[in-house]
Length: 393
Ligand SMILES: *Cc1c(COP(=O)(O)O)cnc(C)c1O
Image 1 (tube, protein in one colour):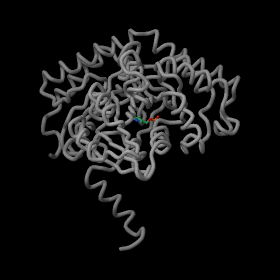
Image 2 (cartoon, helix red, strand yellow):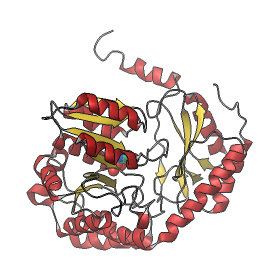
Image 3 (cartoon, protein in one colour):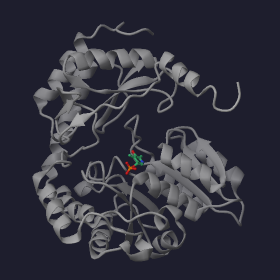
Image 4 (cartoon, rainbow, N blue to C red):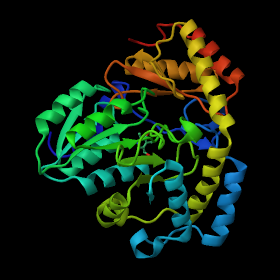
């Protein structure tokens, strides 16, 4: 068979391997409960870590801004789509991250691809953690730099590869998730910084899951009191997770930001984020900074879940974050457990290859500040009631 004749057969093969993906239709806003395909389910899937995606104060700011700024930005930032709303949010994000400047992107995916491509080209080297987010990998591949994987969180492995790649006229960029999106663990930033300095490499940290959630005032893994802009020259954050809105930003010094404005194709050739999203995010940023109780409550739920899941013999990973994977094994088994939970009124996504390595398919439980302790207890009870051999191995 040649050409596209096997396109249907390949879909069938995905289905047979338990790898077929289906979208669920949600009606209404994000929250601790979701109406999915007409049923009310307790939601343990969302990245709305602080429970802000449907916050009425942010919604009100958004609605007011739509009346002032309209809906569409109408053009890219470099043509006539860049507004005072964008400028104000960029300044606020720079202050929040303790960096001289910040630049808005329409999504985290496009920020990651755009940044790596603006910085690297043929003859340069990019070093990526094995478990980096797909957008970081895609950015590295598209850049045409030499691509190096290093073992997950393994600074020795990275060090060896950096030493082998050193060349005076090429750029070396170390790229890592801050909090890994499928395992929930942190990147070893304290060891990456001296290694990068010694190798004349730059570090790029994508703290999509950390910003707003951890650290002093929700500043995430890259605490500006500890890590200067020289230590971590490129910091990426997203707005669609803890901030509960949409979009992303890159924070760094003036030369980095100007380089991105001149060269990042994903910045230049795309419509600007709606101004109302920027205004809503400004409101969200103030709430994230002020309402420390959201992070404290979330931390309490994380401990409660871990203690409970451990007691009933769940296989957890060493994560102190709202991302709490329960390892199941095969893709089919993970799907089967996820379906049984759903029958019990609980929504937890099964994450399967290629998002995670083979035989480590898992339930990716995410906790948010919108949950109650009783919600967590209910999840543990349901997990306990599912037979260990629920699915085919
Ligand atoms: C979600 C995520 C992104 C993508 O961000 P979007 O704004 O949703 O495109 C990038 N990196 C990491 C680590 C993520 O978890």
